[in-house]
Image (cartoon, helix red, strand yellow):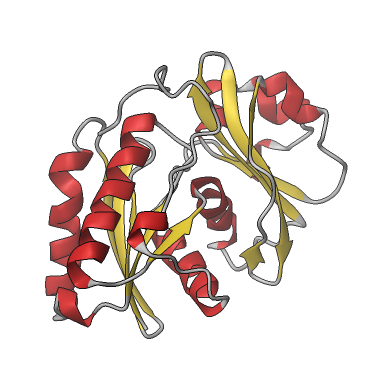
Length: 229
């Protein structure tokens, strides 16, 4: 299977290429430059691997939540590629992909991962994801004030990551997390979008490009949490 994956929902703009088990990726933190960078990153990965667009089986994309313009850009690029190639799209939760980063280190074995992104306006996007094996599992996504997160945090071996912890430094202590169990600088990356998309593909969750929809969590998307594209 060959999948191109992209993630543009936060300040980090990234792309990844899954080639029958081999994973290539690239990305950088570049606020307001995503539109300029993402197609360049995709083409660079394809050139690096020596494969043509036409050989791809599908397109994976982080579908939010995140910054309105970044989520919209990622879905738009993914849909454009998929329509041109007549291939399906695999939408992946941006928060789920962020949570999966906690398992990059093989020695990290939490029972669950709390992924939290700064949503501005005094809120965070977040989800508490159980871990089975080396994969985080889907869970409800929410947007709320940071104080509301602690109310649903049962005791166990947990790990926290994401810009929500950087924006609200007290969040980790409220959750009873030791500093070494929090990665506040982590941002969602296409690498994990690709990994999770492969699993979703095998479960039959690929959709037509027209059916790939963004997830903003906020009803009022006219007040986005800051432009990133």
